[in-house]
Length: 59
Image (cartoon, rainbow, N blue to C red; front, side, top):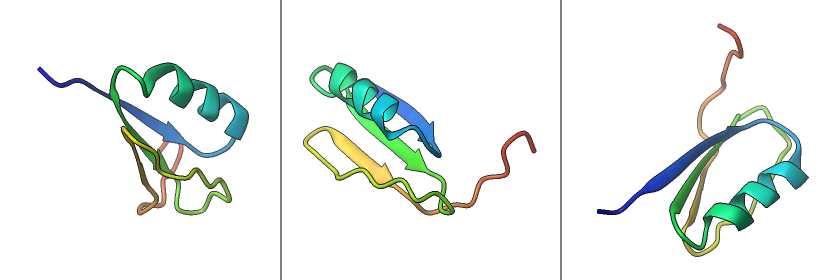
């Protein structure tokens, strides 16, 4: 069975990179970055980045 990790992100690029490095070797990592965020992460093997939706945090 294939397993994936889903991460939502807005800021803190270093923490996001640490999570990617930790999980990418064992899982498919799906990352949603808020459309309004200036954060940019390149796609890698086992890492797919989506920046499509504006999120209302706490809404």
